[in-house]
Image 1 (cartoon, rainbow, N blue to C red):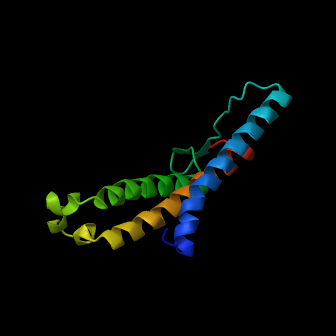
Image 2: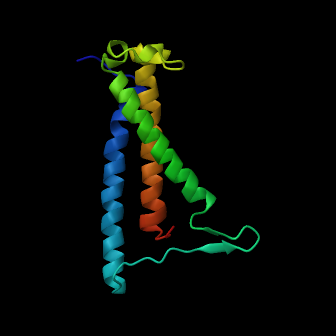
Image 3: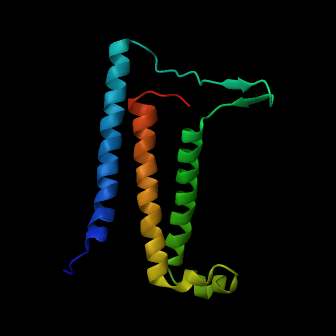
Length: 136
């Protein structure tokens, strides 16, 4: 079997660690709610700005976390599809800015980076909202 480099091992181990952390966090969260005797309902905190007359439902940290999850998920979807030979077949490479889509190594590198960002953001989400019980 071919040897993998350190980055390959880290990318393969990260989902396992992330899933294990999510399961552990979920069990800790449920156990804490059972001890407290609460139903587990959260009330979202709102801040109303008088100057702009707007309601801010999320802070900057939550917005950044959700955008990283969304954009890295989209990058995972696109780069995963481009690892198949579909980019050249459907002439996606002629679209300005998508010339990289037919190169397997570039697509794979983008996929690895997006997967690491996605896993970090998902683990942060579990920790921030699940274990610390910060609604938002």
